[in-house]
Length: 224
Image (cartoon, rainbow, N blue to C red; front, top):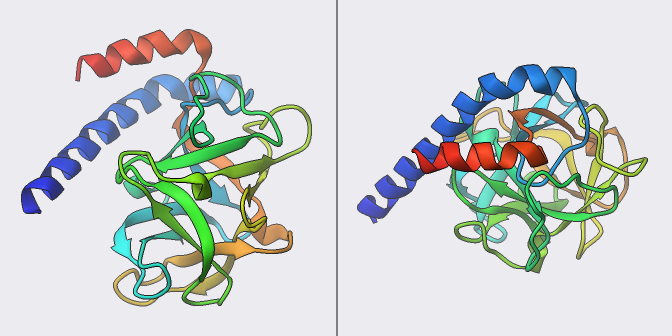
């Protein structure tokens, strides 16, 4: 178990190192050309109402499903807040393809390889619907699919959007409840049945894939 954990940590470290190196190169283009959010991009998601980024880590819930917990953190530089945007289960969304409003996607946690997930379990603090991280190496089940709710044709990087769980219709939300030990101060992330300012998210730091950048990134990762 220790060897497997060490290997997973090392793999996560390599991915994160590549991500951080790529951030500097992508920063200028990201600022000058906001554009659409695309599949294959690796991003942090901010809940503006509460000032927290969507976060996960290898800490499991002590109740409910017992799956990997998903929280909100105020830290801007936390490496456990990166998520890769992918197509819905059993489909491929080509890297660099703009995500449409109303499209189903998966969000895969970079450091643990688990997908943002929800189901009919009760969240530990607020009693709303639990949101967890589920699966192995990016593969889970149909409860990992989320619908991007936004206005216009595509998910714009400068806009605030909502994520509706495709199977339960709950909205990914934060309402301010805070955990104690061992994740003191982190906020509960859960599913809510109605929309409010608690349910809006905005992309922040990350690497935004463009069709012309795909081959460059593939060559870069092949050298790691």
